[in-house]
Image 1 (cartoon, rainbow, N blue to C red):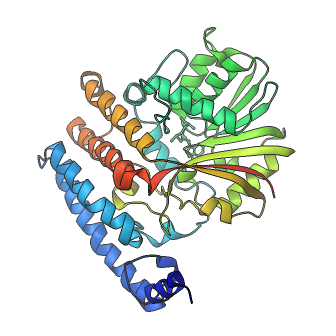
Image 2: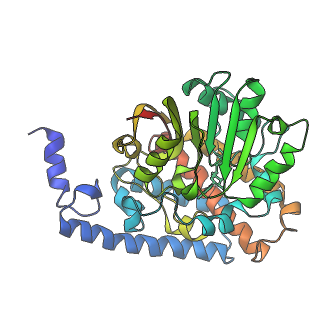
Image 3: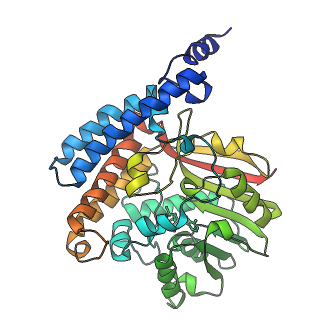
Length: 377
Ligand SMILES: C[S@@+](CC[C@H](N)C(=O)[O-])C[C@H]1O[C@@H](n2cnc3c(N)ncnc32)[C@H](O)[C@@H]1O
């Protein structure tokens, strides 16, 4: 027996540490019981803060910096707050309507200024690439999309589907580079679709060319009679609850020799993770798939290549968003969030501060982004 398998064998019987998926029933049950304590502690701290208990940012940061590395390295099972986080659930995309209300259909003046709203780079709510020396957020987002173009081998004339297209940032940038590429985007957020419809009327936007088609609708109901050369989905699969169903659907839209590119938040822990806080206040039903989840679902699509992008890139992106959020208080406080602004602000600052530290923790090696290139199985 190798030393790894001896360790795994012992780990099966010990609650809390290591891989929750291999535990004996008793160790599993004990681990899940301990999660309830962690959930309660997390909510007690977070809700004290969002209800007005003044804590300097530095204290919050040091709290995250102390606990997150320990949890990621030794107790990843405690980062799965609910049983559903650990496995596939029923719907391709989970909690769609709640998610739009709590997150994507929030006042766009707040989201757009936080994410950055440039002439070519529209708001992009996903990781920017900093490791190639970008000087600012806009440049880092361009470099991120250039990286996608290269890995997905996009070429002029491709017909591309953007599954969860946000504000149309990725289509707009790619259309600007390739005069004969066509894009179709699908998104359930009415507010983000309104933004794109505005750009589709603006002669300066590449979305106004005949080469961009927009569908406002749920990924669960997506249907296209065209087949695409390439499909990309960036920052969306944290809302996907069932990879098997998602890949079955994507495969049905893909040409025989087509390619799919999925870019997601991922964790290099044995199990998927989430948090009670983000589930309640930020991304209902969101989960961060473990780095092996996509390649191990290979019925309709198979992973032919994958890349891990260090969390430092996302930590820096979140730090820029936090700064933009803070710098735009004058505008932000005029907007209607359905709750008092002071509380909304603290809810979002807790999330942004936490994610800056989360992605930076353990030198970015545990919580980063994954990119997966897939073809028909
Ligand atoms: C994190 S954003 C990423 C957007 C874009 N891909 C980007 O990189 O900027 C996730 C996007 O998925 C969309 N989305 C989430 N769940 C959806 C669903 N069930 N149906 C359609 N769109 C959905 C959101 O509205 C949002 O535009």
